[in-house]
Length: 432
Image (cartoon, rainbow, N blue to C red; front, side):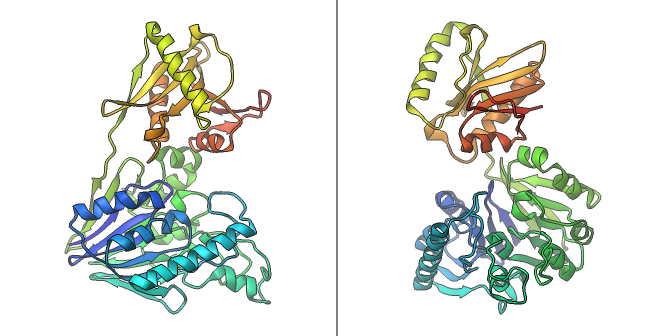
């Protein structure tokens, strides 16, 4: 049996390779994913991993490594060493010198722990192939591009901290029974003045030189991750994107549409609601099944006679929870509607909103997930349910206000944009 398991993942990569009864991992998600990864491995009866391969040193890729090393025997660990020259902290913020120093120590500690329980191999230009049974992966992007450009006097980037660790991300390609498989990790296609690393994914695609059947889309489908030339070569049939489907569809529509146009019958599969296990048959046919599927979220409307009771719940959360997604506008109770989000019969959150039936404008005055349920993208799925519910009731656009950067990023993930109509210190965001 030759299979690739993409565990349910948003903004992280967790890929299990299976061949001839042996198993290996490519990337390990965040630290909080370790229990879910272990549960999945245990469900398959996995007692040992041949190797764990970390494509680059970002927390959404190396996060569960140490926990997994404690739980399972691992034959070898492959690590892409951290450059210590990272311009970004991996979450869209500028990396401070303190952040880079901390990550350097973290990487050194992680390498030492891996070496103490397994065989450690640092990924560099000497590593050209990675094998597991029928999978014989070619490795692209193994050199430390950031350090090479930083230290080379002939590079236009000599002595400059200009890039994030995605510039150091490894990509892998294998053929199994004639089926081409390209795992892009977070490798990007940015144009660089140094020809050695210019448009990395395009260079990798040229080296592959043929269409692929399965493509793990780089960097969660975001940004400049493949050129037209890249797609004209790879022409993927199945593209797996480790992100929320609304984020891909609304913020990175062009990337999605280009993937769909790359080949007749192409499919784009986001791993937000479920994971996927792809099987390569002996004759090279590729098929997939859904795994780890999350239960749906339904809405429970709060009737008018229960609004006082609901108001107390709302006030308690606003008073106790500083992370609640709430603006500070005063709205007459008579125009507020309220719903609870329900998953498997349990209330996991709530929202208050005002819908203008004439204009179709829907103002979300409060939106929150109860603390015990804030994991695995619950907030995203709650908003998807609320949006569908309100649009069915006549909503044509949505508005939220916030002064919290994390909350603003949350709404922007759905395609909300700052319309520059602030209310005091509150930013107003709209989604049409």
